[in-house]
Amino acid sequence: MSSDWRVRVLFDEATIARRNDEIAKEIAAWQPQDLLVVAILKGSFMFAADLIRAMHRAGMAPQVEFMHLSSYRAATVSSGQVAILRDVDSGVADRDVLLVDDILESGRTIAFAKDLLAARGARVRSCCLLEKPGKRAVNIKADYVGFECPDYFVVGYGMDVAHSYRQLPFIGVVEKDETAPD
Image (cartoon, rainbow, N blue to C red):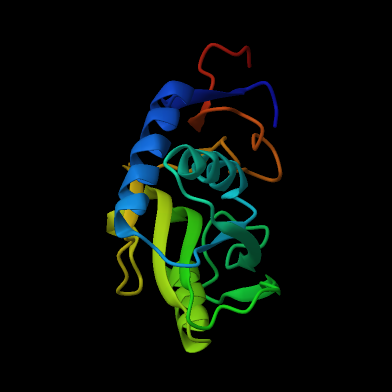
């Protein structure tokens, strides 16, 4: 992106780390059996990694898998259709599965994944780093939520715009830099 843009911090590193520890304790209280964490790629990779480490500190030892689902492709708004780009390798029948996603917005992606895994016999709960409640297109609620997020297009902490900003250790909003020269 051009230098006419800047990223304003919405949730800083320390706030995210504290919330990950709190969520891990909430998940531990569930007392899942034979837990499989399924991280939905690409946006959740940082959150999933930090949450899994927090789960370890909370005394849990989940197995980990990944699904790559997409409803955005190259756009900034959902297409409404979810595509499986990569499926889990492990069997999920008779297992507790925790789906981990970056943003619960329209709900289509997490609902699709939850229905798919439940149809395969899993007991599924969901965990989203950010929730935008005003954007729901399907009737779904996450079992564990990091933060309620204003209706901004957010980047950082694994989330991107055109493959940029994933590396940021915080969640931010891309804004026009009013101090940049014209």
